Every structure is written in structure tokens, then in C-alpha cells.
Image 1 (cartoon, rainbow, N blue to C red):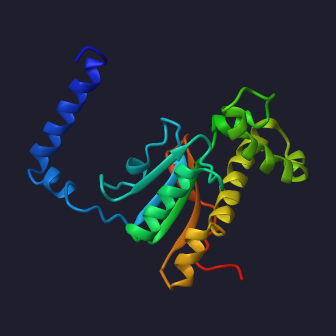
Image 2: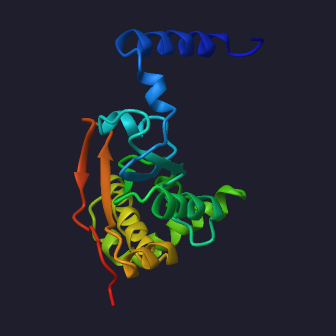
Length: 201
């Protein structure tokens, strides 16, 4: 291996440890996956989805991007959602943001270049929608953290209107959408209490 030999060495060590602890680990992992959860989170390397909720590989279906955005025109996110709901028949979609998110912070700054600027535009729109509330907060840090929360809340609302989700509810599938936020300071998750498990109409 010419490039990144340390990562391959880490991989060999990890695989060996898994087999030592549980000789059937990889055999089970090759079986059909049956996760109950879809995690839509940020691509930030400090937020390892499986680890912070204590789930093993195969127990959490994951989609990550900058700022945990559910783009109505993002075919990648929509395909992951459709597969999770229609094929894997997951019961919970968790949108998990995190405080001190760089993608959220960028929405307070000057325009950058595409494709990042086109992506951040989703967050700038949420910032604009809540401009009055954000302006009342005492400082930039508080505005940044609140926008992290508002972004999660907005993504939950968007998800509840995505056709894949609406169809699942119409056919009686048990499916709930949750909005959580992760605190890098202490490693704890917080429920934003915006869960939805049925259509609004």
C-alpha cells in the first residue's frame, strides 16, 4: 500500500480486535442489515454517529453532509431516505446537528464559492427566516448556537413533507422523525422536542 499505510495498519488492528472479541462479528455483519434508525447528520469528523449513540455497525443507517441538510433537490439524501424507509423499513429518522458547526457559522459570513455557497444557501435562508429572533440574542456565540438548533428544526419540518415519508405514513408505516443536537463540549445529545410521527394534515 503506497498511500496512507497507517490507516491500513489501523484497519488490520481493528478487524483483528473485532474478531478476537467476537469471532462471529463479520459473519453477522454480512447478513442482511436491519437497522431501525436513519441518522442524518453533519459530515464533521468530531461527530461519529454510531459511537455517540452506542450502536454497532449495522444498527444505524447513516447519511452525512455539511450542516445536516435535507435538500429537497438533493438526490443523494432523497435516495438514502427512500432506501431506508421503503426497503429497510426503518422506524425512526434522526436529524442530528451539533453546536459549533462550521457550516452553520458560514451562513453568518460573506458569500463563498460554489458548490459550497449553493449548499450554505439552505442555511442562510433559515437564518433570514429567523432574523428577528437571532437579533435579540446577546452575542454572536448565542446566535451561532441557536441557528444550529433552528437548522435541525427546519430539516425535521422539511422531512415531514418529503413524498417518501408522506407515502409511508399514508400506508400506515410506523415512522417518526426526531430533531437532536450534539454538544461537542460534553459529548451529550439533546432532544429538541420536535418529533413528528404523522402528517400535519
